[in-house]
Image 1 (tube, rainbow, N blue to C red):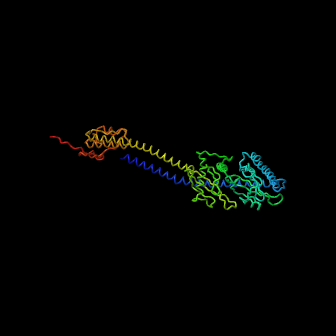
Image 2: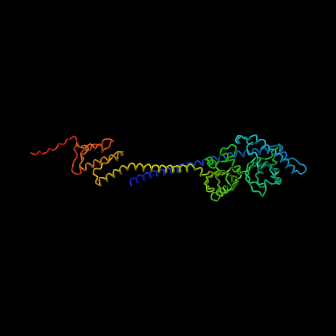
Length: 463
């Protein structure tokens, strides 16, 4: 029972220490990492917003450059013989193609290996644009670059996007987000477009507009993720089991309740849209807000950030940054697991050491107990050995020998006629304290103190 109490006390102490450490980790490290993750998402969103604005300004600068070409302006108002509409289409198409070749085959190779951040606006990547068109004063298409798009000539762009008429009316270039497709049978995709007015040479009168646009898709999301990871080339392929992957968030671009590009798989993207744009957590008018979502049974912390609406109050577009909380909080889980492993290790080793120490400590007392049983069984001459005993057991063995001798009326160690074997009984470790005045249970008495010598009794001499 004595051993059990000591072991149980040790187990309780170790368990209390482990529980305290576990709670400290859970209540300090976890909230700190969550807060740091939120701050990191906000800063990443700010970087993404600035990068997006630079890309928009670059797109706008390119549209201005194309619209400022005198020959293009002249081609829009020139008088053509024969099929005038077709001839104008051919001439304008040729001039648009010239500028596209300039962007893709002359400027882009020259700047290969140079960071996008270091390039002038008109030379920033991407160099190839999915929308590259010119429209006339009425808002109808004159020419566009692309394969199998001849049927598009004459299409009324201003009917679906009246902003182009506002640009031609005001004469100020504008940026906008379009859900665009080249035919009614195609699924509309999200584009970021720049609209620059075409002016009649020498006047401020507008004769049309140039529209350049970039598709917002998974490639754009991956390039943004590469920017967050510090990849200068824009290409980024994270290792799924590294800490780097935990620090780089997933990216998704949305508009009006639909995600058009992301770094997630198709199924995960659909699951994210279902949760973000449900009635319970529908986007609000706040610039940004945090939402906890679960994708494929994995918890994510999502930052929903809306883009500037640029005059379109009905437009609700933006980006979502998602941080994998399992990876973000992995240090907490590792610390708790390490605490448990170390705690159980200390508990096991400590219990083994404690039991071994208790065994070594109480073994001598067990031998003394056996000696007591010998005396009880009738062996009055049994002597308790204290050789190799620790101090407590050796002291007890010595005093038991003294007590046994006193009970049997044997001389005490301080008697003048004490036998010479007391030093042997006390062991070789050193002299024991001198015993004085030990009262005998059988009526005898030990020798009084040395300071007061006793008188020897006189013997009767027979006459």
